[in-house]
Amino acid sequence: MEGAVAGSMTPLAAAEFEPLMARFAPFEPQPHLAVACSGGGDSMALAVLADRWVRSRGGSVTALIVDHSLRPESAREAESVGRALAARGITYCVLVRSEALPATNLEDAARRARYRLLESWCEEHGVLHLLTAHHRDDQAETLLMRLARGSGLDGLTGIAPESARRACRVLRPLLGVAPERLRATLHGLGIGYVEDPMNHDPAFQRVRLRAARAFLAEEGLSADRLAATASRLARARMAIEAMVDSALARAVVLDPCGFVRVDIAILKAAPEEAGLRALSAVLATVGGADYPVRLERLERLYRALPDGIAGGRTLGGCWLLPKVGRVVVCREPAAVAGPLALPPGGRLHWDGRFAITAPEGAPAGLTVAAIGTDAAARLAAESRGGGLPAVIRTTLPGLFDADGLAAVPALAWHRSDVGATLARPEIAVFTPLRPLSGSGFTVV
Image (cartoon, rainbow, N blue to C red):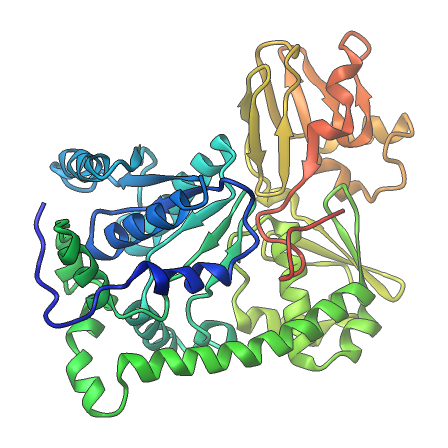
C-alpha cells in the first residue's frame, strides 16, 4: 500500500465525525456498520473513523472490499487492503464480482454490480447501515456530470446523504468533507492507502472533470461552491417531495399483489412537477426498477393520461390500463424476470418486486417464476384471484417443482399433492427495490 502526505490540511477529528453521524440517528444499541472500502484514501479514512465511532457505542464495523476482477492484480490488492484493515483491528470481507460486465458504460455497470454485492452482504448478515466515503469533491463532480446530461432537479441535488435500499440504508457522512482532510487523517495515524489506476484513466468522465478542476475553480466553480449549490437544490427537492407524498397518499392505492390503482383526477390536481414525480414513483415501485424512467418518456405519458392511453400503455416495465377514472398500473408480463432456484429455507429477491422465503421444510428442487397465462386462467376458473385483472395474475410469483406449478403464495393456493405451508402469503411479500414514498420503505 502507498500513501501521500496531505499537505497542511487538518485531520478529521473524532469530535468532528460525531455530528456527521448524528444526523443519521437513531441507531440500534451496539450497532453493526458496514463500510464500503476500496483501499483508497477516502474509504480507508471512513473505515477508521467509523470504527472509532462505533467502538465507543459497543458496536462493530465490517469493511467490505469489492474485487471487480477487472485487472489481474485486483485479488492481491483486495487482500492487501484487508490486511491493512485487520492490522487496525477492523474486520473485513472481500466480495468478488462474478457477473459479466458490458463493454460499454463500464463505469456505471461496475457501480451497480458493486452495490448489488454490498447490499446482498448486508441483507445476508442483517446489517442495516452501509457507509460509503463520498466526499465534497465527489459531490461537486456529480453535479457537473449531471449538468452535462441535462438532468432535472433530482439529478442536480447531487448525492443524497442517506438513501433507503431494500435491505439497508446507505449513509454518506463525508459529503461536506474535503478529500485532503481524509488523507491527512490517515497520514496522522500512519496508515497508507492505494490509488486505483482507473482514477487516472481519461476514458472516464469523472476523471476528465477532475483534471479540469483548477480551471473551473478560477471561473467560480470551486468544489465548495458546487457542493453548496447541490445542498440548496436539495432543500427545494425536499419541499417538492412533501407534495409528492401528499399526492401519493390521496391518489394511489397499493395492493399486496404488487399493483396500484391511481386516481388520475387527484394526481393531476397536484402541481405538475409533483404529479410527474408521483407517477415516476409508481412506475419504479411496480416495475421493480433500480432507477426511474427517462423524464422525456414520463412527460409524454403524463400528458396522455387518462384519455390518451385507451387500450393500455407500457413504460418502465409496467402496463397501464385505464379503468373508469382510474388507471391500474401493473407489471408488464414481457418484462418479468426469469426463474430462480429456491433451496429449502432459502431467501431471494425476485423480479425486483417480491421477497421470497422458503420454509425450512420445503422440498428441494423448487424454483420461483411468474405463473404465466395458462396457470392464471386455471386459477381464475377456480375463483383464485378472480377479482384481479388477468394481466396481474400472470405476473405473480409461483413456486414450481418437477410437476409444474406447486403453489402461489399471493393467492394462498397450492396443488392438492403439495403441503399448504408452501401457500402461506408470507412466503412471497411485495418488497420493491424502490419504495413508493421517499419517506421510507414501502408498506402494503
